[in-house]
Amino acid sequence: MSNGADKRKVLTIRDIIERKRTARKIVMVTAYDALFGRLVDEADVDIVLVGDSLGHVVQGRDSTLPVTLGDMIYHGRAVRRGVTNALLVIDMPFLTYQVSEEQALLNAGRVMQETGAQAVKLEGGDERIARAIGTLTGIGVPVMAHLGFTPQSVHALGGPRVQGRGDDAAERLLADARRVEEAGAFALVLELMPAAVARRVTESLTIPTIGIGAGVGCDGQVLVLPDLLGLNDRFRPRFLKPYANLAEDVRKAVGAFRDEVRAGTYPDDQHSF
Image: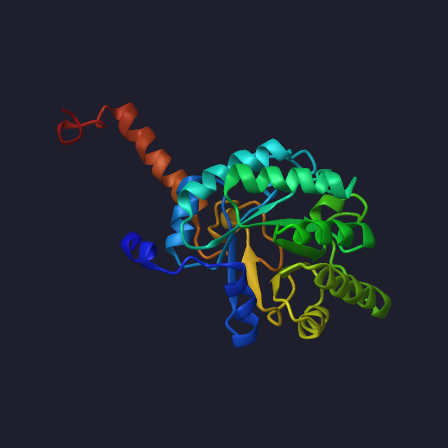
């Protein structure tokens, strides 16, 4: 399949925006290293996100807050070596864009220069974040926005809770969505919100929305790769549908290796020089 993947079109920001006009659903998954970057790219996804979710699934942390800019650049550079066709987007981690527009510009510039990514992703939709988005897009750094449950605000939000319940909360989300679109974001992730609210936001915008726990009415969907693969088998939120059970496959494979090593049956003649 890799030969076919090499011949596919290299996707751009314009291609992602066009998906909304043609009603072709956008597929986004996360990756954190070159190997999985290559595999998901060969599976013909549209966007590969190097998410600060690596704090959970790679570093074993309780939140994304400890993830550093250096972490994101390291993993982004690795994923770039595996991704040749999909659009590559990298999360800006906590406190790398919220302090000032100058800070956002310098840090996003580093990410773009040092990883080869085509875009960065920022969480939030208040006026401060909108100004940061406008500053970045104004000098040619494409920005994907992120509303609803924003993991970098996990403590302020009281945990991973559904956002936008009730008329006032829904109106605030809609206002934030319009604000980030006006600031120049090319796409918007909607996380953990009622499906009806996500659909309303989607229908109100000209830029595509990508949902996670936000219902089918979005213009696309994203999942964290270890969750999608069933590798992270201790995480089972309502919105998650695992498409494999690789955690059990890993345990079985390593167990079989363990047994053969202890029995002295591996390596045998076939696997020796």
